[in-house]
Length: 309
Image (cartoon, rainbow, N blue to C red; front, side, top):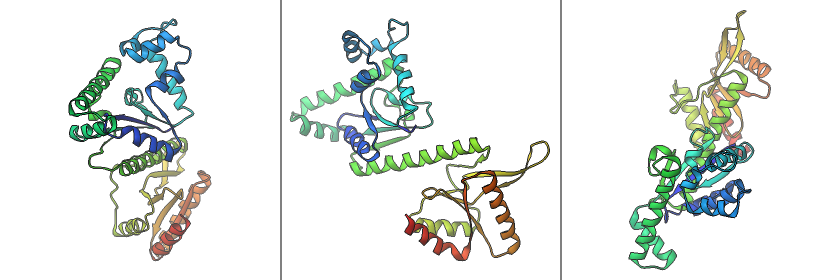
């Protein structure tokens, strides 16, 4: 299931962003305290106290001879098989570092901005605010370093870093939501491709091959219709040895409408061949929606999809 991890500096509005995302996505926010209570429920009060106070205690072994950290990681992974959630802090970006369904975000702000926010929040002077800030930064970094052996501040641990001095809370939430949608779409296509034994053509930067495709993409953008360029190739004919002899790569995929679009000219020869391929795809891959579209119909098609949304 999709998973979002958020690492944040004190005073960066990271908690507020997590709460707003929880409201919009309907996902539970899981913090360090909740992790201990929910995923290590059978511990004694002494063990729970030690986990809250000592990072090194996570590396100690329980009665079964397993470290508390490994016990926790196993519980979180089992939870993620059935649930999406927003994990805040705790080095969760390290726990799910190899999970392709996880998105890792870091929320930061310049020290000057964070100091001003802490002064307002706690009603303290500059000296006290700086002490609070320094203590928080030091403890967070030391915890992740001790438990996971990873530098919390290393940008390579995150897919996205947002500076809330330059971005509003709403902008940050929107950016994370957009990236989550793209990531979920990419993973969906990858899984479908594996299941259907098709070929995954997703790339980081689409290169439209001809003016007709560029024009169609421009019209889709004008109507705010999300699209992916040639995301998948469907094998449709094989020889006696099982080698693919014919395949079909639709030009566009409209994500919201789960529809593949193949552009064509008025040349009847090409139209007939593309219709034959599309028919084969529908037969071999049930539930796949494909439309053959003429250039003259670009505008009207986009308008219909726009009304449908």
